[in-house]
Amino acid sequence: MSAHNLQFIFWLPPVFLTALLCFWVSKIFKRALRSFKDNFSRAQKDYEKLLEENRQSRELRSGLEAGLQNIVSLYDATKQICKTLDEAAVFASFLNEAQKYLRFSDCKFIRDSVPPPRIEKNDIVLPLKINRRSVGFLFCTGVEESGKAKFNILAQQFFLGMKRAILYKEIQELAISDSLTGVSSRRYCLDRLRQELERSRKFNYPFSVLMMDLDYFKTYNDRYGHLVGDAILKEACASIKENVRQIDIVGRYGGEEFCIILAETDKEQALQAAQRIRQAIETKLIRVYDEYVKITVSIGVSMFPAHSKGTEKLIDCADQALYKAKQEGRNRVCVYGSG
Image 1 (cartoon, rainbow, N blue to C red):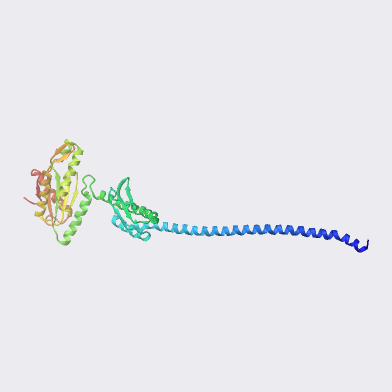
Image 2: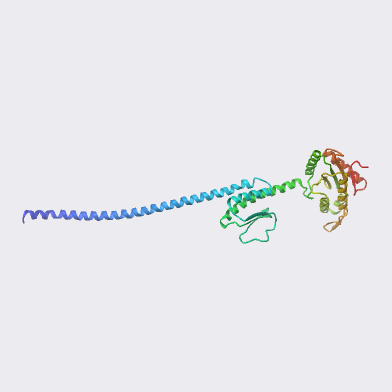
């Protein structure tokens, strides 16, 4: 064997081993490359998915922010709706705010304890209750389905404002009205007397003051009881109000004593009004529970400016005339200063 062949034999194993090593390294590299590509592809897909989720999240957040801002602005409408304590003004403000956010055919507030008799399928009727008593209904037609949630939010703000207005009015009425008879309280009656005095003085108008007292009222109270007495007072007040004008003021001055202010009324007109009241009460048969009673009244009359130009003096003059009517036998009308 030649030296060249011997050299080839010694050289062959290293070449084979190198080739084998290269093949093995190449296979490992391809596998690693394939794994890298797969991982990269998955990472790319995950990244794209995250981008999409992020975009959707931004859109959702933007929508929520817009919706929240819209709701906040709806609730901010309360400031406008509740700005006033007048019922008509509260509804007008609500209508103005509702038209900024909604489209509807008609909207009205029905001040009644009974709902509207005819209600269509798509009409919205929401009851307003105060302390479990129904005081009215908010009635709206033509609201789109997508706007009903907004309408309900605005309606609740409207109800807040309307409750404030109604309760304020009721408190005011309690302050100016006698709780038993429904006529003006003594304080309110005196306030109106001062106002009428100023007005009459300014425009040179006459007016009259009547002081009226129920005859023998204590006897009725003692005989029939206070419930019957209260019923008699109510019926007497009803007769008074039926026989005076809307511009006149009827006030409960004391227990069974009443003050009546007749605006722009001279002596003859005041006498006619006083006699009309006296006769209406005298001829009225009052039924209280199982009892039927008849009552009479005595009335004293004073006039501005003939008898006085001050409120206290006018009342005092009418009181003196009332005392005279009682002294002369009751169930009669007397004018201050008359013989």
